[in-house]
Length: 114
Image (cartoon, rainbow, N blue to C red; front, top):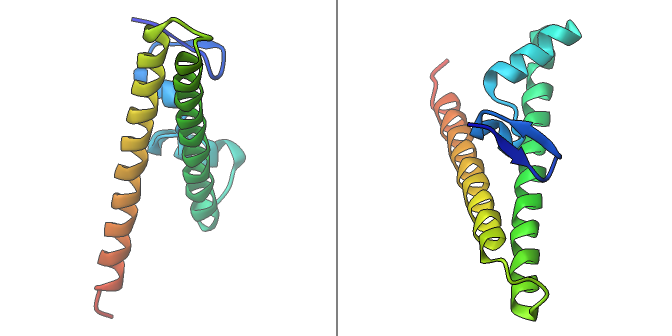
């Protein structure tokens, strides 16, 4: 099943790709394509995290704009509102899950004995 990503204006087949968030494989592929070594892995992961946050903020903003349009009577489409709210919810859940994973990894690193 294919979906139209209204934020980017393209058609994607994988729902995760709709979030415009680089996965671990995508980050690895970017590093290999750039020919970068492991020392810049942190930069690539940090850039992917920032991209994730920016896309999440955009989806939240789009959902809020749809709510405002519906409340002001500029739009009668509850379908668009439901889609925008679901995109925002999914993106936010994904971002929070990533944040929790990073915090847990940090805690494990800090608890390692040298």
